[in-house]
Image (cartoon, one colour):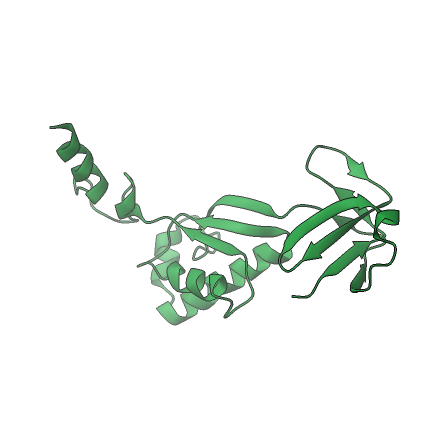
Length: 164
C-alpha cells in the first residue's frame, strides 16, 4: 500500500474526543502521523477525502465465534451444516466484522478448528478480513464444545506436572 493522507473528516483518537482540522498520514500499513492539516502542505501522495466521516482506531473484539450463527444452541445449528459452508459462514462473519470497524478479533472456538482456516486465509492476505487470533481449548484450561466433562486438557496436565 502506498502512502495516503486522510483529510476532511473528524479524527477520533480513542480518548472520548474528536479532533477537527487534522489529517492522518498512513505509510504502508501503519499510521505515521496525526497532525493539523497545514503540516502536510506539499504532500504529493494519494489523498483520501473523508468529509462527513470519522476516522478512528481499529476495534478489537476479543471474544467471537466466527462459526456460530446466533442460534440459541450453536452446537446443534453447526451440526446441520457441512464443514465447507461453515467455513464460508466464518469468513462472511470475519468480513462483516471488518466492515464494522473491527480490525482484530480473537476467535474463542468453533467446530473442529475450522475457524483456523479462515484465520490463516485472512492473516495471510488471501481474503480480506480482520487480523484473527485463535484460541485453542487444548492450549487453555477450557474444554472444546461437547468435550466430555472429566477429560483432561494438556494445560491441566502441564499444571499438575509442574506442581509436583
